[in-house]
Image 1: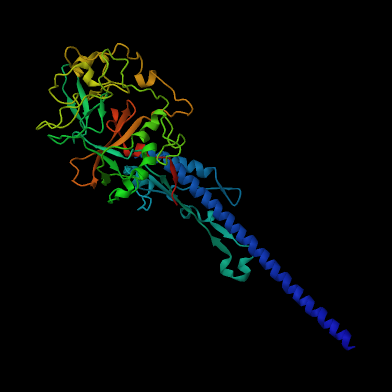
Image 2: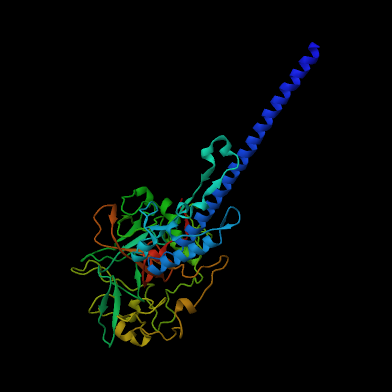
Length: 470
């Protein structure tokens, strides 16, 4: 009798424990299902925010049209997205905002259309969409806590460019004026920008707007320290600068009106890195050598130092400098002073390797018939009997790289033009007046970077590919 009663009690206890275990297992299963729903919805919102922010940031170019394109591309990306596995997203432009810094402050689309300059970062906040997008109804959690009957999830993504396609090399603007008219002996005048003439090649290491300058003034740019902050000498050592000089980039998202950190350093020791554009690379064992993957050659690696299209061979790969140390005169090229000095045709260097001189104010290219007025010389002006009929030497006289795939216009250097004089000292901050575009006519050396002035570039046009920043 007692044994039978004990067995009944044991069976009852086991049944009770089994029932409790089933409830526990069901509760755990419910939590797994609910947590899985929350995780999946969070990933859906994350994917939506990331893809829409990237789509918008790619379109930003400092114009109202770019902002409108960003709005359109974000909406298109959202339209292709889903939540709750199959529900289409109902997009609202209120979820998209813009800023000139990745940390904000953030501005609405309407404000950015009205004032688009500098707004290069896009943020998507899914909390600004309809509440249904982030609401997850729980199947089991509410049994434990009625307040958990539904949960809200959201995602915020910020996208923008990671840097600027600007070389860590700067020179002085030869004139602080953005544009001037150069009067030539002819019916139309020439456009001069910050003291540089289109189509003329300069030695970037031997220019100085200071009156009576005896030597050139160039600077290395700190590629890491944010504009507006004073960087360090360590950031301008060759070991740091080399990969940035190879790629022609700065790890700065924006310069704007802020000064950059620059360093005076002679001699120039990064010519090999610039020459990666000519398919020239240092020893693989050298940690400062460029690699074709990170720094591909140009699609045309021909040196134009000889100016084969010109009637008189140039004396150098750039226009000859003016006499150094001349009282009251800057150190420039013989192509710059007015009235023009008496020089021979060879002194002008290779002309129009990348592009023609520009007429002011129309912006049209000069025909070559104007060379005698543009470049007077004795006993005769430069001529170009072998100049390509329909294009330029860079476009027509092509030597393709061997062994590596070339990238068109890699020989274009985007270089900050500084407001000079820069205060004395090895490390200083300097204001950037503009970004000058210079075409490398020939490989560089420690004594010369021969580059033809090819105009100006806006900072916003030089952003590197956009990426997710948070």
